[in-house]
Image (cartoon, rainbow, N blue to C red; front, side):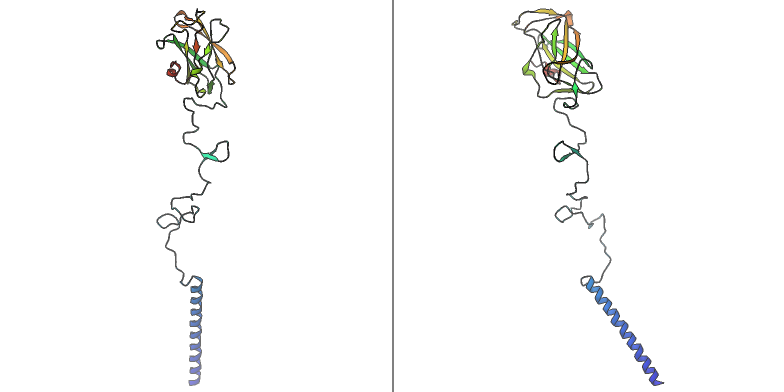
Length: 247
């Protein structure tokens, strides 16, 4: 009986020793796989809050302010017609200084078919009138060069004043106006071949700048007519009336 008990006790002790050795081996393996420390649950949040991981900005460091700085896949771009692109503006395409809306490369020339023209005599400068052309159409048009003026049945157009040539073509959106100043007689009386004209014919210039285009506009001159002579000239189209009356 004592022999049986001793054998049973030895068997149980051996089983306990075997289990202990197996547990120690498992702990050693776990410590080796985690760099010397037993694995623990991470307390750092994945997104948002202090300590959140930030995308890389190209130098291996996160800036914590959203998408990576080197990320070119977000945002709106527009083509500039050359290599690369530019960010789209909030307020749409921009305008050239002193111009109305529209693009000179695609906009048609203003003509008498869709432009209302008026002429007004002014007090200053003396012997001047103001020509106003308003786009009554539904699309923009370009007022190229200077208006071609003919007094009554005159064959030749009135001289253009070269000093008044603007830096850019005046583009008229629907409802916008362009202006030209008319000096019909020199104040010093230096002109010749004078006569009283009662009508004024107005034609618009073409894009090439070598002639007129479209139908003409016929206007009745104020006060029963004006006395004009060879000294008369007309300015190029301007975007503001005061610019047209500068000369």
